[in-house]
Image (cartoon, rainbow, N blue to C red; front, side, top):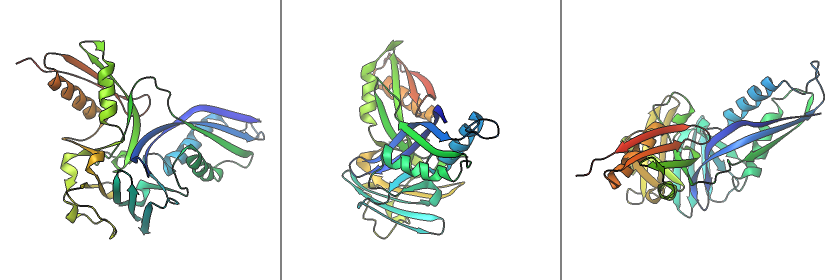
Length: 294
């Protein structure tokens, strides 16, 4: 017998790519279970399917930075519960020093649907009851016919996993100018924040104050350094300046929506802007802004 659940959960995460650098993503997860019936004449109760499988996926992949450990561009070492990571990409080198729970170490050359699917299935097998013989996952993007961007960030004040310095989202954007849909501004933000790291200004530190790996070859001329303490520990990241935009405040979706609305209002005084900004799939914030003509 087979049991399926569509749209079981969404994984919001970032990963390292040799070509694109650090990439924020949001993937929908569908599940198919194959097995015999239990004492309730079920393969598995739907409530347990959602709770159990979501819990495992959240623990091993959600709001983490996925590392393709078989890739020749990655170097990492772990001591106790801390990991140092160095990665070379065509956009420049990326360096991190974070608690181990900020990463997911995927034994593959690249991060894609297939490698993450295998990684998740391995983590799920031990969690399922004996009557479930097989589990199949489908990982997929949200189908979008409007512009979107991939961004990574960290929220040090968050009391959950958003505090991890390198997690992200694949997010659509919808802008209205004087109440009318403005696709040209949707595209503006999709282009501006293509594969971007959104860093908080107060987290910036000089490179020579950071405790990264000895292999780090980054300077204040080439990289931004970010360092903060959060409930889960000490987080450090050095990332090429070309891959980054510095935001003058925290990068919560509420403040990002306001940042985008204010930016547009300053560009076109007298116009009223309404920005609907998404954080991944199906959730986000709305902000309005207008600057009077001088």
